[in-house]
Image (cartoon, rainbow, N blue to C red; front, side, top):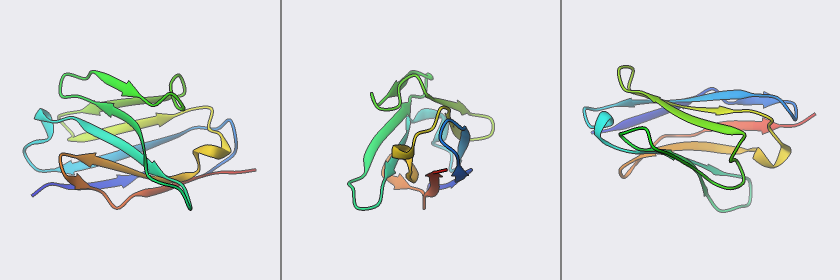
Length: 111
């Protein structure tokens, strides 16, 4: 069974940075893509970024150039480095692998 645990959220001012982590348990980590999603209050969940097993990365247009996804297979962890944060980035951020989801970590961008 795969379990995912996100961490690293918090309150940050506009223009600031945060790094989210997604720790994964289970032996399938190295062979699967991992996605980050976010859900703002009152809005639908949206896809943010993905990284494949060969470290190919993809980003939503809204975060391209500001966010960077990476993975450490030895630590079974995926990171989301978020720079130049904007108030519209405020959301709960979730990581997903196959059909498994974490519980989310809250990012709030505000003065």
